[in-house]
Image 1 (cartoon, rainbow, N blue to C red):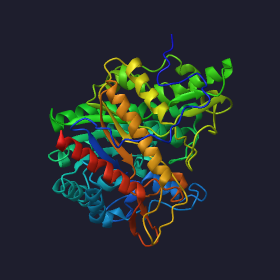
Image 2 (cartoon, rainbow, N blue to C red; image 1 turned 180 degrees about the vertical axis):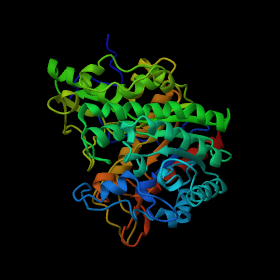
Image 3 (tube, one colour; image 1 turned 180 degrees about the horizontal axis):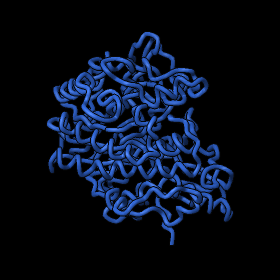
Image 4 (cartoon, rainbow, N blue to C red; image 1 turned 135 degrees about the vertical axis):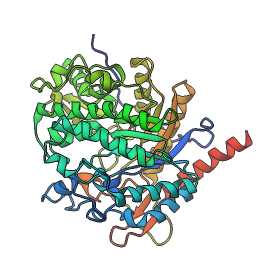
Length: 473
């Protein structure tokens, strides 16, 4: 029997969505981690400084038409030069943790061999500055910026890239592991594999169809190879996990065709990652998702991929409304009409977030503790103002609803240990360029001026209230 993990097959019309939701009277557990997150290519800029070599996103962004606005990740938010200002914003926000990624081509330009001292020193200074302000660093080792030199050898289609990643992970653990105790191997391997190698919407822009399964497997293998290396270099007190982007899947109707499409889409989007990481096997319906796939799986691979985790990171944005169609896995994703949607077309439906968390617990006995490593909303029309913060009320509404849902899940006994809002800064939003803004802080990409939004003030005040409630307890 095929397990329908983190999927909602019944079409419910509409999902209840309260505008009265509030978290002002909710107390999260003592020690709960609240943070915000960024990624290297989206904010750093300085793509040719201090020994950094090109990544696949530098190459991809230079191809006309690949990025909607014609931009690249240079200068993005110029964080490479302005990081002290951004650390000060984190301190003002009052978060207890900051999740950021390391640019692999900045610290190991060719993806092999010795580390680049200048690149490592940048992250070392950042870590020190965070710790000085009482902010715990959470490092993501791979957030999509593969060194172009490795792509020239096949990228994630090439099994050797997984071994190069494990070596890179070990070297970074040696350099930062004395101060960094929270490590995430991969961010969203689904996007890396499918958008990068199946549909071509993201770097490196390959359109390999079922051949993209090799990228899926080698990404997961890289995680499996890196986990024991990290544990050896970091010791038992370190926390090691992976971040998966998961979505509830809602069938567009009760028809058999749409129900089956939802099941296949769930396998393609969710279970092809959760099953190997949490069970050591691929979904039973894998043949329906990648019928013409290559077979890159070798003896022992799945045991490596299922290495025990200290936490499972979940990036959650929206459920998917699915009907039978011509898209991947024989499914089409339909636009939402029953809920508020952001400028990415993502539905603001926090109840589905709770259902996803509960299905994970039900479908995966022994599930490790969960950390929500990304959650946020993308908006286009957010010009800076001179008479007060940007009134990004849709973002405040979204964050409040999802935090309320998270608190309810914790009250129901689900082991959730942290929440990271995406994102600290407006940034380079991949193929959308800078047209879509996810930040708590507005960035003027001409002047690089940072302006906190209303959502920044809301999150800051929410965190202050949490601290005060625990202080009074």
